[in-house]
Image (cartoon, rainbow, N blue to C red; front, side, top):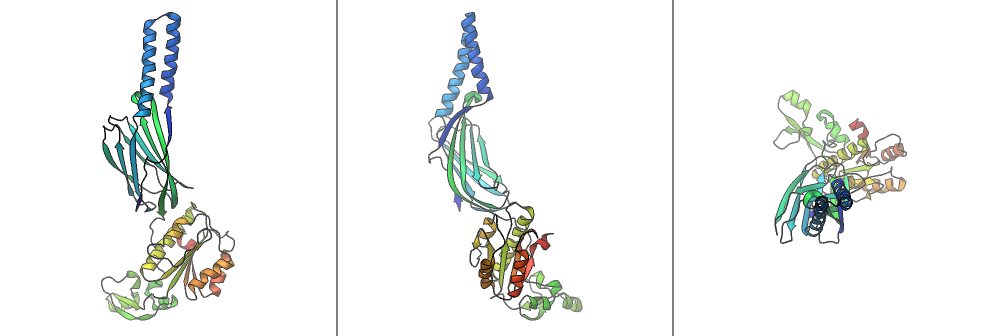
Length: 357
């Protein structure tokens, strides 16, 4: 999936010049005045030359920029993971264009993605050009709009014509991929730890290719000298919840959101039913492989859930479930109340603040 940016929407066009343009203009005016006072044909000729440069640059920049631009980027990316943006530029004129700068800037509350920016020295008549740019997402979040800017530079670099095209986009930046918490395993391969998590231990058997390291039964391995693993019951009916309360951009909160997302992803892959809640996103129902990143991408400024929200979440989870608590500070009111309510409902709480400290 990708989004396209095209110049066929209604653009905002502006013709502009920089410091060099102003200096040339002032120089031409000064030479015209001096030539009038001194009656010098040479000064008048130079002044006319400067004026002609200004005129040609302005006209060329204004009328040579009939370009069609497509910018294509992935819809879903992750913080810190490089991705490629594809830029296609076509000159629709029957003559050569001037130098061109294309830039797409994503609009969001925080800088989620770097700008897609390319510079092309010139394009021939009817020429098409494809470019690839590698970018690295900066922060987690979503962007729903972007500004596509196409700037054509006139001769001598005196004037440029800039077209800005606002457009809707879908750009989701997921949390950075980090190691997950192994909620399905206990300490050093102890079967009692599995039982405490609600998993039925069927016995101990020899390790087979594909068995997870977390299931290794270290005591029997040390006793027999061969690698043994615990054989547990399936994960059907097991449930995991996540409560997120914090401010987007806060370092500790972002670290917890990333750990929670990785943990939920692993749990879903192993058959655990997962639910996530935040005050600004709400509860999206049971998360799936295709939807589990949504709450972790969208959460921005969430508070600790009130009693009604907790009741709704705990109804989904039920007694014996595990709850990940992603709350970055003890200062959040309601934190202790959340833990007490979870304990009274028979839900085991894992404080992610302790895991990232």
